Image 1 (cartoon, helix red, strand yellow):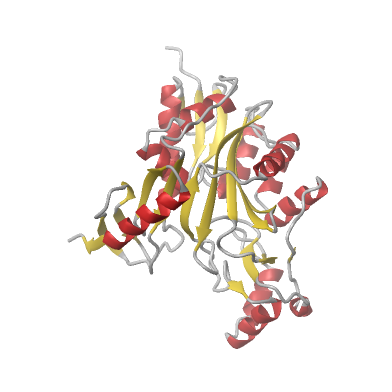
Image 2 (cartoon, helix red, strand yellow):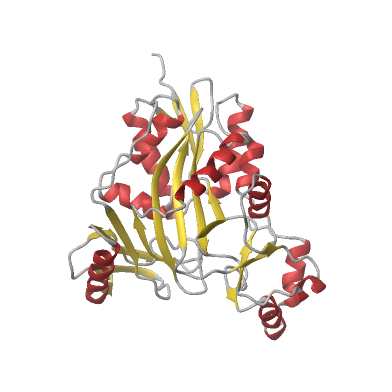
Length: 372
């Protein structure tokens, strides 16, 4: 019997990576495709379900002659300093940032807040105590390393970095209330906007507090132009999730992700939004356009963040909402996998004010109990 065409998915064992893999598997079936464990002559795409496997996916596709993004373009996108340099070379502005390599580099005269970020990887967890932390200035970060006796460890990592994080860079930290993002799907020839958001993060961290899908920044076209520049460099047949911060009304890139956002993944499942089959069809050049509609003008998502508690717990929401994560699991042996550590819910609404008001009611009424 003649076998079907297929796609290959690269995923890790974490809950978020596996959730995206299941969405892609369902989308493949809807398009009459199989999911294969490795590429062959019938493979149409090799797709990453996590950023850490994006370069591997691109190289695997390239090695088997499967249409996909240029591995060099992917390598630039998933490496923050390279991505910033590339976008700067295309005329886009950037915040102050640099990669300290030696002790004198920490004497830089920059007295505004900075955040310490790994060159590689995305999310909110880092294996080092200084990762994803904000400081009042470069000098404050230097004093922190000295006070905590971490200076030698930090400089040792900068000399011989871990492969999954790379070196750490210091970047100007704008704050938690000015983060905006768009997700676009890049096909064989053009770029389609999927959705846009505004979000806030927990102060001093990149952990998302809430995200409002449907919000469009006045300079959103600038963000789309950044993704188009990456597409022109070879980043084809990819999902690109770009985060920017607003400084004085201008948008500056802070992170490029090559997979759908985790909150978006939950929203598409809860509201039955056909993002994955339509995105896959567009990437495979089986559909000329890609249109995604929300169930209301906005969909707000709130994450109730607290200290992760090991074990299995259950959240009960006492006010009207759409539960996204209510079965809570956290394993301290896998601290990077916190996708189901906290309750999360969604509200379809007509304005940001409505979302904030209703989300506050849900947050106050939520109860969490251990599962025995």
